[in-house]
Image (cartoon, rainbow, N blue to C red; front, side, top):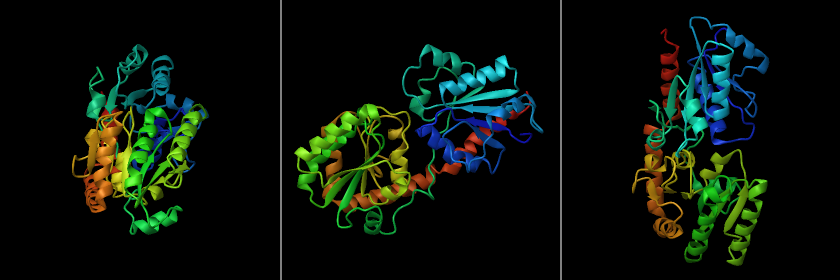
Length: 347
């Protein structure tokens, strides 16, 4: 604890985008600065402090006057405020905001009490009323990489090596636009027999009826063998490598890592104009961005790739190069470490 300079709390047990970010970043950051997670739902391989060690935060670390408490949710901001302002622990509070909507009064109250704020995109920054620094998410380009042979990659996850696949990955729910993707596939696949579709992700209990309705819609179209619901997978990188095209059909998104994961895997992306998608995709080079909640625009953007798979392969190669040059996970980790160190400076 004496060498711990940064605490990365994670107060949500269920896997989420925030949790995934912590899991990917902390091991890289730990190479350069003393950092530990606090909370449930994280792999045991991460450096972590125990709840009983929170009392140790009253003691200053070696060589510094403060520690940084890096919150990514309201409840974590609130905990930081209590630790610093009520319990008088020597902490500097940092918040990363990914939201692209007007903040509630409660959230604005908490944000104003932060010592520094990071926005994950320019769109996110526009909703903040305090000074902030834009640090876009990165991706692990070693984990997400192109397939040496796409047919072999398809076989490895139990798909038909003779087919080309378009994928839609994420929670199965209306917000994520899964229904738009299904409707686009029902319209397109009968005209493109070389292609099939994969929907990877879990429907929680409250969205199970939504998934059941989509499955029924697919069955009614006679496409149950070509529009596949494959469930949730922890090794999702293997599924990306089996694709020739990825679609991100969300109606709303905070940031959205799936386009980066797809491009890093050498797969072009058709994405709606939500989250940071328009800031991630090079229009006409690594994919295309379409209006949200517009199934006809989605169909029209997907069809050229299905008609000419060579274009998909070429855009996928450009996508990989784009991510390597601009969205490596090391880049995000390094920029955050610089912010930590600025907060830790005397003053």
